[in-house]
Length: 64
Image (cartoon, rainbow, N blue to C red; front, side, top):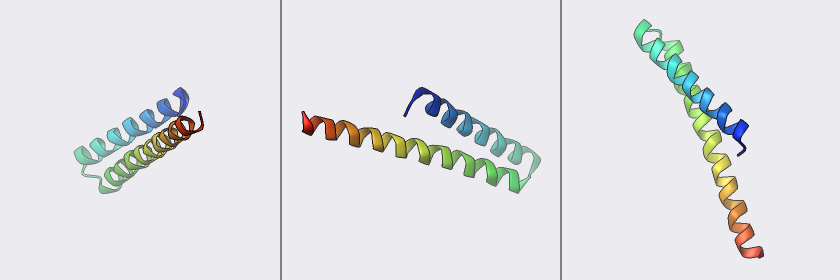
């Protein structure tokens, strides 16, 4: 996962957290749900990229 992808993922997580908090304060369930969903999407994407990187490192360790 490159720096740009990591930054985008972090921005998406922070945006989702902000939406979720605003939804809490304003009692807007839709915004709260969107914020939570956005955070989970970013976390899932980040975990997938980390797994892919770990797989590449493992492959490289066995092919040397």
